[in-house]
Amino acid sequence: MTKFEVLKGITGVAEYSRILFDMAEKAGSAEDLEKDLRKEIPEPGLKIVESIARSGNYPLSLDGIQK
Image (cartoon, rainbow, N blue to C red; front, side, top):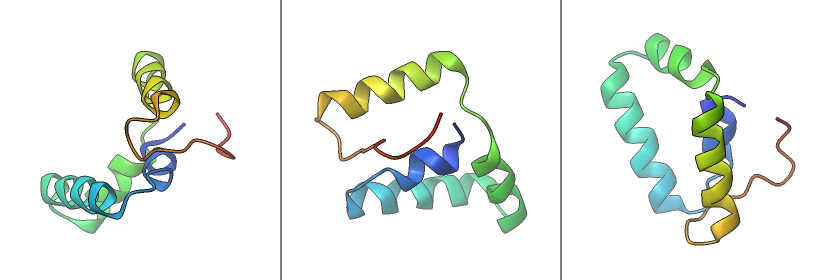
């Protein structure tokens, strides 16, 4: 699963905007942001993301996203 796929699963506008803005600032260019969004999330990070989605405490839905 890529960072882009996880970002698409964020269902809260405020959270989505904040994360995307932070990523764009850190990237510095559209090309670098694209590279970052294409990166695969390593297994430990993926387990954390899945745990967050299951908890229901953060606006994240991984329904329909293939791993």
